[in-house]
Length: 341
Ligand code: UDP
Ligand code: MN
Image 1 (tube, rainbow, N blue to C red):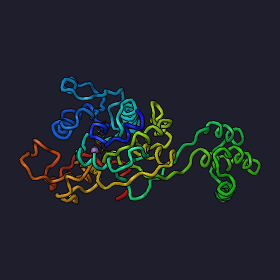
Image 2 (cartoon, rainbow, N blue to C red):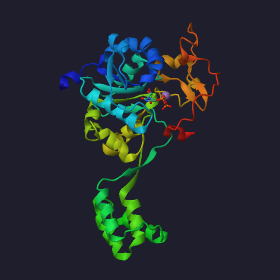
Image 3 (tube, protein in one colour):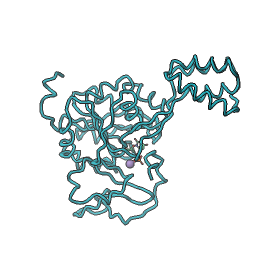
Image 4 (cartoon, rainbow, N blue to C red):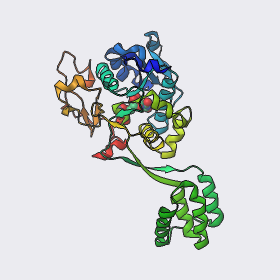
């Protein structure tokens, strides 16, 4: 697609909306979305799941049945996010947006949000799930080389002489800043001592602390095509899962890591995206039409949802049950987003 395409006004159909779901939620969560917002965005909404569903297909939905595992594991979820990214890249759409199957999307609000950005910019927009950047320990490449040097020189992973290690750390921080000085540093240390240097090398050279913002996947987020294209070396095909394994964090954190740490692009923090990890009762009724995404679900063992007065019963629309319901159903959420509390 050429420059003339991106200069045109953005249309709703230009937005690739990826919905992540799983077989056992087709009849419950997904069904609600199909009857509501997806009924208006079907042509450009893509359902990423792990189970074939003839009913969905016959209704003409864009369905991608991934071969990802159907569980809530980091790997399974990264596998689906990776499929979403690849699906977008193969499309002719101008924006990629991800949502979960417990998100409500307000198409008009989404369009006006994305229209306000430069259409040929590097944009990553969503809601941060923490009030500060997340800290990750990135496993460094070439760690096999470092490890073999360490083993050749020392052998044991002794954990003593903390003062010596602290001294080394200072030395390295001051003089050896780039990764490829790792080997030099290692041999320097081994000239001085042996065993304590081994544990130092292991912990210092094999991983590095990184801090970055990420948009919580449960609230939805979007990427401009230009940025998505730049992400390919760390996100396309099997590489997304590899990157996720490198930082040992979930799929949404991995997107933040690639954008902020690999590409040096800052996330745009936007309050219009909402997950059920925040108190949804705080959203004022009159502002609901302006919100890009909404959600419902359990938070701190309570049902967290938007109260909408209308003609739907609790059975017809479980996503807007009265907030007083306090059923104990799910175990505490393990998402890192919970750390902000
Ligand atoms: N999900 C999935 N496989 C699973 C469990 C969940 O693909 O085995 C999807 C689910 O459909 C949803 C997202 O992962 O889109 C988050 O799941 P959920 O809302 O249950 O958990 P949360 O992380 O919000 O607590
Ligand atoms: Mn959820």
